[in-house]
Image (cartoon, rainbow, N blue to C red; front, top):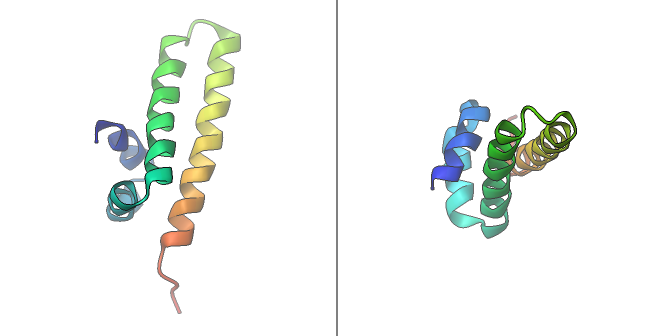
Length: 78
């Protein structure tokens, strides 16, 4: 579950929900794993402007997907 740590760090206010989704939803788990890989790659390629931008763009896209999952899974407040 180490890939989940980077998602929890980014979405700290939703840690419980991230943990639950990671365990029960295989698609969410894949997105989290991809997110962690993209973060590491953006760090590895930090000195290569083009690759770094590509990975950072991918990180942002995956963050949007993760947030969408979180938003959909949150209980409605009234």
